[in-house]
Image (cartoon, rainbow, N blue to C red; front, side):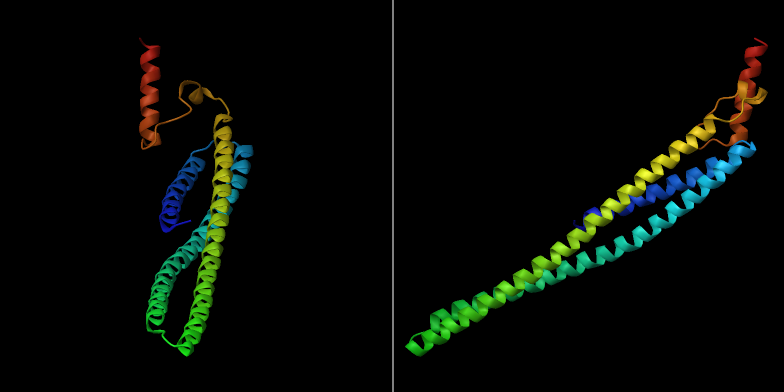
Length: 198
């Protein structure tokens, strides 16, 4: 998982927090029916718990992001070290003339090759660990999205189960986002009256 993916997840979490705020607003507009109030109270608690999980997830994601950035810096340093070691190997191969130099050359080659292998193993191990952590965090965030979707379904069902009274009989169950409840109610009332006296 790269930094772009982490940033994309952070943007998705911003949208998710916006959806949570919308759920709070919808809960405040529900019927005063006692049963629905109790159901909404439980739903509100679930939403709060979900919001806390999302906050924790974002904090953990920030830690992973920092690890990925550190990993990139480490990769750059290790790459430079490997290049320098390879240059030393090439220079040693050119300078080696006598049998003693050949032995020293072989020893240096073995030491340098072992060092390069250790660096590569270390870099791969560190990268795999960060990728595994990132994948686990992706799965946790995806589960939170699924839970939020289920809560939204419950919220919609509660809204549809509002008791039908005279006012609800002539007014629509939904109003467009961004339109205040009073303004929408006036519109619905005027529309109903125009139909009655037409």
